[in-house]
Length: 254
Image (tube, rainbow, N blue to C red; front, side, top):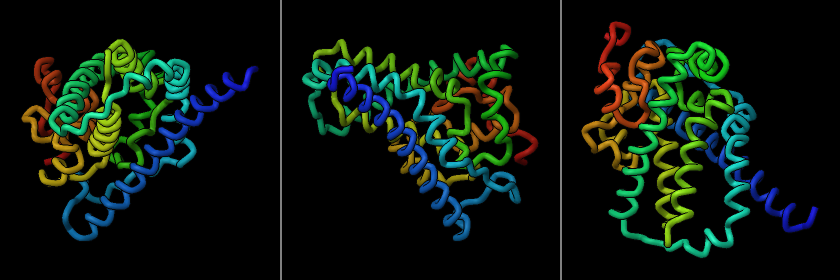
């Protein structure tokens, strides 16, 4: 194998596992902050006494990292052309707009696949059931507790479509892409933290996306883990609202 091909493969593997490691570190820091804020009396568990789940680091890194290896390998193959069109735009409004629109699109993607996972028994059993073992013990360190195929379909698949779109544009903003990844990771962690978060903290952690009236919060997805027939979107609530699957409260949380 020529050294160029070996380098490209190494970049793909390293980037994929790097994403997995970065995700785990973000979850670990978020978990530590949640525990500290709970000790200060700032936040509390939705169901007091439930022990937060803590996934093994290796399982976490590989569940997230492995599905991203093919994507980053493909990006490495086309980086010469793709990278030349990168244009850094520091305008915060442009970055925030890109993040918001991308998350709206991703939420539609996620809601569609997630609903299929719950409605088709074989898909749920073989792909999605692992993630629902969290139940009431949802935590920041359980955010990525899932089958790698689940992560690949729900997240890598959308990001691959997004990169394919950007590849065919005359320019693209790397800062906006990085901001999207960071905000999505943090919003996912919020949805799985298992804590009632004050509005100001939710707004801060989600990079301002939480200011939108249709944004999901930490309670929204926690309800899904208690009663999976509800709240199947991840970032927003409009798809569940239209589908009749949105709930803002359930008996278990009263």
